[in-house]
Length: 122
Image 1 (cartoon, rainbow, N blue to C red):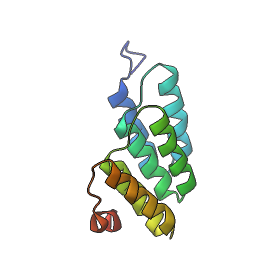
Image 2: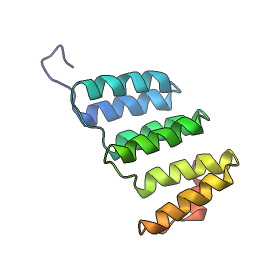
Image 3: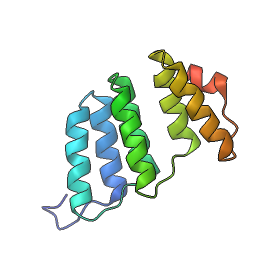
Image 4: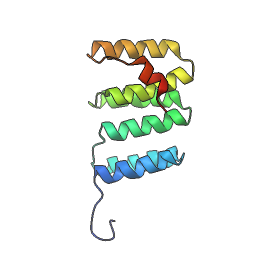
């Protein structure tokens, strides 16, 4: 892509990061994420949600919680999709205290968390 004189944008990076995560290559996805950020491209909610989902599927739930905090600290509030991904991972890892904290956080932000949706998320 860059050889043809076209620089990848956030959409391109999100697609590549998603593909890496889907193929259980989360570490490589984070390497690409770092490259993206070094090019002054700002990650969006999709970028973070894809990475958090990759971490969830890799059972790296503490890393997912850390990334959620970085997302928040960087001025990118998580959306309901991101929280559903995270809550699903927390439930599957029997982290009930963290589930309750995230549900409470969602409620204070005006979201209506959907327990059924969170528990059924693939």
